Image (tube, rainbow, N blue to C red; front, side):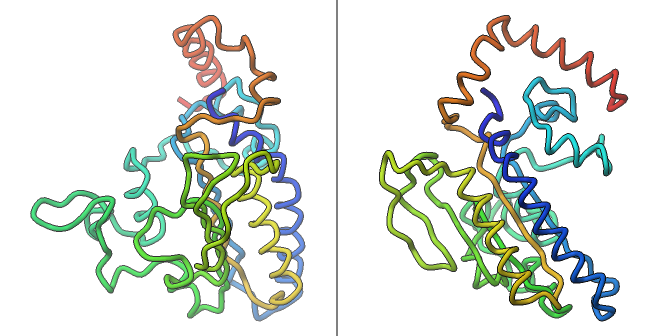
Length: 258
């Protein structure tokens, strides 16, 4: 079941790509957009190097595999091995210690650290270039999204309940808790809001480039996959971790990734 929540979200990828393609077509028609491409970052939390199909995993991720086949697969990507410092590095361009988002001896830092005023997030810097910026998903950065340059945001803070989170914000305003049994699933909701923001962008801001930061929590614990995904992979891992690892290792080598 590792990564199954992320695989479920990949069902929304075709719609997301369609919206991106539509916005891109608007950009090509507008010479003023030259040199300002639309940018989409899709971030998965605690995803293993070989979890996705395109990296040798047994988990079915056909939409992501298609993206990889038509793009570039990096083979030496590094992160900070934890959530908040990695996000700080991605969104500021600095090492996490430089912006107090990883532990620095003698300084208030780490998960509760507050960035220096000069360590602005990417949306703040892109705004000067005419970009509109959208966030959907996990945050785990100091401050709130709109106060840090995003124009729209769907921020799920309660990440321990995939089916009925209690703490959610949209555009920095708290929403009511999700009722149990409502059919809600966090990963899908994050993807749906991202799609909605890009559709809105295509309608209202087609002359501007966009930056989308879609930050899934899956497959970060707790592993709370939908029942149909659990059923799909039932028995898949009965042989044990060693057998799964050996099979992945063979596929990774065959793909030329190591």
